[in-house]
Amino acid sequence: MQLFAVVKKKIGVQNIRLGMYVAELDRPWIESRFLFQGFEVSTEEELEELRRLCKYVYIETDVEYAEGQAKPRGTPAIGRPAPDEFAAKRIGFELVDKAAATKSRASRYDDRASVEEELPRAREIEHETRVLLGSIIHDARMGRLIDTPRAKTAVAGLVGSILRNPDALICLNQLKEKDQYTALHSIRVCVLALAFGRHLDLTEEELNVLGLGALLHDIGKTKIPPEILNKPGRLTPEEFALIKSHVPRGVEILEKTPGIPVRAIEVAAGHHERFDGSGYAKGLSGAQIGLFGQIGAIVDCYDAITSDRVYHKGMSAHDALRKMYEWRRKDFDDRMVENFIQCMGIYPIGSVVEMNTGSVGVVISVNRKRRLRPRVAMVLDTHKQPYASIRVVDLMQEGSKPGTVEIRSVLPAGSFGIDPVQYLPLAV
Image 1 (spheres, rainbow, N blue to C red):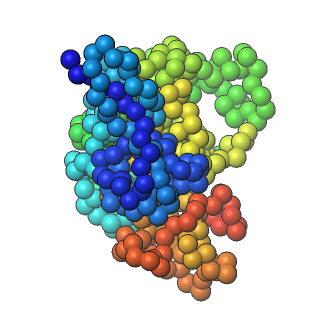
Image 2: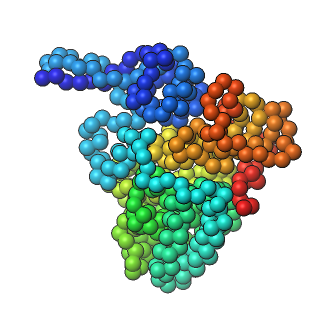
Image 3: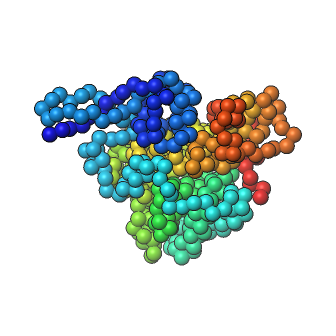
């Protein structure tokens, strides 16, 4: 009987082919533009970047051996659990497996509008949702039932915008107001969950259920005193226990509300659970959390760590994705995190980037087919002086010939005093 083992093999970059799994580079990953520490080469763009950056890499390949022989030594691919791990957490993650296995797959959805075309509709939908959520929060505080039909209508509007072009609502997500954190956080989490669900090829019906759960995921916080929610200092054990109670309180509210699907409640129940069982309120782990619960956990965490609060300064989107990647397998399923990074883009909207020419710009929309080539609003010239007028460069149109303008690095938030929001196409 012939068996197979996975082993690492060193090859020159000129021999890399599509479909190979790159396990190691000839340099630290932090020096590359690849966020994934181990990935399958699925596009010509990735081939070009590896050949530009490296002299050699280590790939993972199957080696045949006979039964009874010692198994060849090798290291499992980072980001690819062993088969028994997959079996243990298989339920509910078929879509994630499919997306992770075929990153270059044809998506269920294509953009139907440009970000500029979609922004006016997205702004109106976001405003209507904001007004509705204010009413829902007030009703919940008063002990009244949630207006489920209106909530479903609002979510359907958000779903429609996400399907036309998710970048419009993602741009609007950058407008963060600290004094309205709870309400706007819920809308941002809903938008992020829908964008992530679109990336995972959820059906429109599933997106509506996911979005409803994400919009209402923090409804239990209406039962927590604001002075505890917004306390700038360290919480006492008693205060933290009160904060954590917002999860079961929220689940109770939603379970008593007519018309809320069970899978929508899964988002509220699971958004503070962690993959290794270290979260709350039930200490669930792995597949016990459920697909919608894990989506809720990832997008809730992402928005929280990229937002300014009274007790911390938000980090850049790029830094947040790197940090969440470090937390994979502990806090989040590694496949889920990798898919979320793909969804948001290697250079997320609002990232301040330096080009290979020395000029500086702000990413204003991602490229879902060529992740290293977003659209960038150029802000500073090669001498780091402001341009007389802002011009937008579509790196997809730049090609990949020598001398082509491309992104060299992502700069820390606040670099050169740049406020990314000022350069997003929000005035349309």
